[in-house]
Length: 408
Image (cartoon, rainbow, N blue to C red; front, side, top):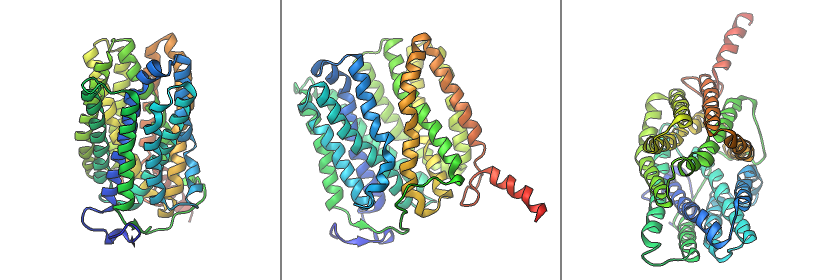
């Protein structure tokens, strides 16, 4: 079946299914980003002569496309979502592939922006397509498989770099070119190897924020805030407080990916059994414990274990996505995905700077603040109904209906 054949989701057969296309593209995105991030600090210092000032600017540049993810909705006037996803994947690969050829501060900023634009646009469109293409009953399980595929690709990238860097005497440009090149080849396979899947429900092509989605927006914002604490400060603590070497940090990343590949499909199955409300409550209760432990941990092995557990909770965020899938008007999924991704990245603009100052005063305060954020998320999750659906988005809807009934 040719790439230019347009078929409905139900007509897909064999290995060329929408779910397998999502798995393939997520793996490609993970390869490019894992290659970029694995060499980030070494390339910045050894090749581009970065100091703390430049690395801070670089991280801000990297987050700009995530904050601007809502602009994806305007690009849907130019490309359909599936096409835009493949182009974004190729852009991420391109940005990674050319990074090593520009070992200057400005060159690294520009290539980082290109990589990040592709990465964040792909993540935005991928979330939208997953919620449109995957049946509600199977979405948690399928999303778990997709996360596992991304973790496997991350493992492959880290392992190949770890095993071949010294053995083959590689340099930065060759590794970046290889990682980005593989992602671009995967984009070509996604383009030519799969048919165009016809939208079951046409998507609105304008920005929107609906009042009835407020709980999803709030949970998304809090998720982005706690993610920044993990990304920016958890790994930093491993190096500063416990003296983890480059090899130890790489090993921790590998263990993280292996653990996530195993646990993500199981979490998807649990969401089907327990429901979104219970799974999100479990996530936030666990996070409160993890952040409190981070604040006072003194043993490096316990700290490493906490790091693995903390990262596993990312997979539980599947429940937040499937909660939205159940309450959303099907035509709202694409525009809301872009808005939600921007909301998720608001914290990325503020937390690294403000909490960095807090870290200078006392590192434990950062993690105590994270525990407080998890408490807020837990309170919000209590408002999720056991049977979320359109018209029954929060328990407050039910309470309002109960109050209004006697007056009718």
